Image: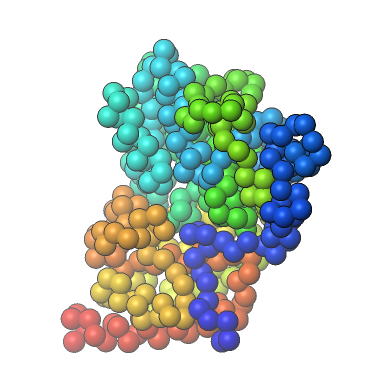
Length: 389
């Protein structure tokens, strides 16, 4: 293989699509205006670029353009959604419901809110990584203002029953917020069909640039209101002040358009490659899939390898193949994945699990090479394991 290392960590970040880069470039140089400068042509050009990108992003998720708020990424969007809703609806109640396998950007924001007196219910998941809808409904109290359940998990790719969650939220007059960072651009996400009220996502997970994201905020049935977390010039409907990142926003718009046009074909191609990789590694024996195999993203497989010590497996091939043992945001920790532990995995097996996430530029040749390299490493390490000596 000439193009080493092979990149199979698309859930951590994606490369910018060349068409996205091409779209962004003018807004760094010749069309560098501030989108809030309404007195001259350079400002108008920038504002026009932002408006167009807003329409492109809205089209991807079935929203109205006025419902898209641009942010610096999903972490900011998550914080604005959670803290903004809690502050705005404090008169109605101070209870929110979330899940133990959420991304740290949601869990840590919830921990922050708990310190301020907000009551948070953390729903468990079953061994497949799915919440129980009966438990969700039973957790709703008169004081509940928000349900925050992620669309698809970043480590396992497991997709939660979003439509059903949305319906339950509506029946109980509770807002439904979903962190859809891993889902948007990968599978069909439609905010109206899914009964979503607030939704976060990020450009760099869908072949756009880092440092830009969005928050969908429903405008009617119900009209959702949030308290701004950054004060300033009143940009983005007063919800997110600060000079707009025009090149980044234009890039997110183009990335969203490309994903919308390629969604079905890309999903089918990647699921076939993923299944080929997964099937070959399962044949090694002592390998199992973490999480639900039916309700999951088409490009992700999280595999547990028995009888192998911790990070030894990844160290065996990480010069050649880029994969992950867990979330990119918690990879500095040596602790086993909290997501996999929530599925019931023992520490040793959780530490011996790898996430393979494929993407737009993954080739069949790369998958063949990965199968060969991982298989060789597994067989070598198993010979060294105490149980096999």
